[in-house]
Image (cartoon, rainbow, N blue to C red):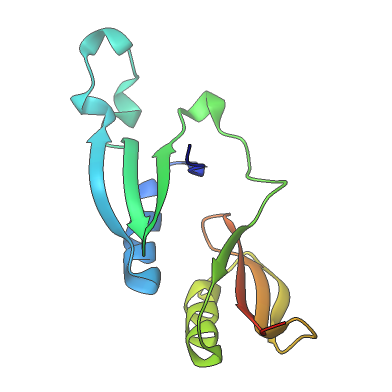
Length: 137
């Protein structure tokens, strides 16, 4: 069994994917737009160019995502995606990149009692992230 997060965007999935490719080295391995789905699915004209489903990797991990139909989008809440980073320098770089246009910085990246670096934010697409470079216990 694998647990794979599925992210829903409010029409910004493609922009988010491009941003994650640039900042996190994400790679799309499968993508389908609403216009590529069978006609009987009945999606409205305004979503035809939007992403119906994408599977992408960050390192060895998989995340799936799509643009939610306009009447079905809910703001992400109740979770963070944690990125476990090997070095403080890489944690600083990734946090700075994800912070570009961030909706909120909950905890600026800094050393903590458990981590060489830890920071928490909501990126410009509304996705909550934690960047964590743990100390050896």
